[in-house]
Picture 1 (cartoon, rainbow over the protein chains, first blue to last red):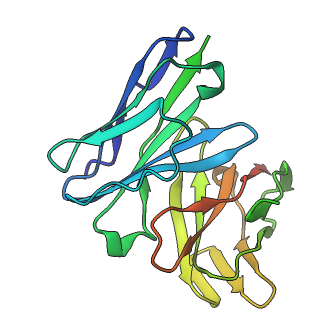
Picture 2 (cartoon, chains in turn brown, cyan):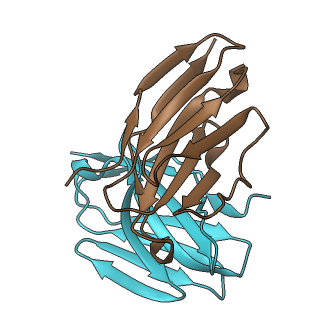
Length: 115
Length: 111
């Protein structure tokens, strides 16, 4: 079946602009995660959604970052007033439920470049 | 010090060789240990996971966890050029949701 999809694949923006990144999890998966992969930092957790519960935002690096998940499916990660250090690959993952957290399926990522 | 340490390589071996990839960690509370494979410009793909200590085998891949030494390994037997990728170890605390990753090791299998 279809895997996790993300859009856009690539995004180039100017410093100070806002960007929105989209994630479509695997159908039926209730848990959704955002990670960031950058040179020198590796893969870092950003935020986690599970059903209708309050999200775990403990990994968001600053208040310029926010995310929402509408209808328990699609998620959008928003970065306001982008900075050059935000350049990275943003990866989304999903699992069938919170009890299957060890089997996170990743999407292809969105490559963000802030000029 | 990072919670999970992984030699970034690069590691280059001839086809057919046995490959050993390793990670060390500092938090003894980690309970789940995963290995992901990531091809260039793709997302990570889960290869195997192990709960607590012990070995797990899946085809040409074997994962080992030594909790006493805080050390995990992934062995690839009869390596193929298609195994060329970056291999990431990841760990989870019991009851937690976020994966903690190593830096990844870039592996090249030469025909």
